[in-house]
Length: 237
Image 1 (cartoon, rainbow, N blue to C red):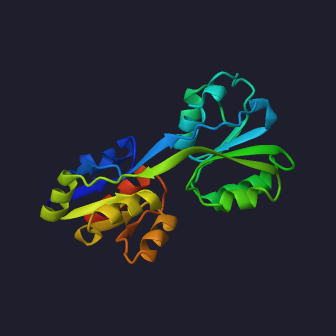
Image 2: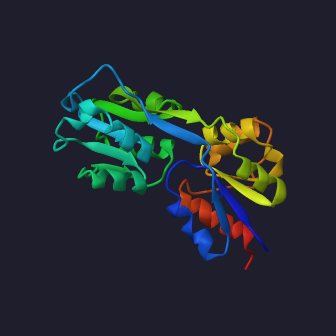
């Protein structure tokens, strides 16, 4: 059977390579675009004792700011969510003092409470403009927390005729890795023409609130995890 999977995330899609190995076709049509938030209020990296990164985009756009680029990173203490975020930091020669292995905010909060590393410390949380408030509201209970919006997420606003034709002519499965990605798709295309696959519970809740039902919600919030879930669903051994 011919399986056609549409990927809507911005950036790399290497995490979905296992789909190709199973003969599943993939098509990449990003539904969002992230841009660096150029801040006017500059600060010294020495002003904060710890910096928390929740995504690769956070790392990328934080260090895109010229006033950050001009400073030494040798004494920077970082905490991050997920191995992918950790890897991006290490490429900048920054070794995180702590990495939450599971990409869930509530698990990170629980772990940081237990190890007490941030207790009464001055901390900066780096996120995007659409990030949920859960981390900020819970972390500020035990540290002196400042939020830094490193990037803004913009929805794609132009219909892609190739994607529109694919949705009309083929049986497709569309992967959504964020609420904003689904919102963009819903504004441009007929969601009923595809089967919905979601990266996790938060994105699935958003999709359901808009009147749709994902056929698959990945248990692991990673591209590799979604790919495994897709394979398990589509290919019955």
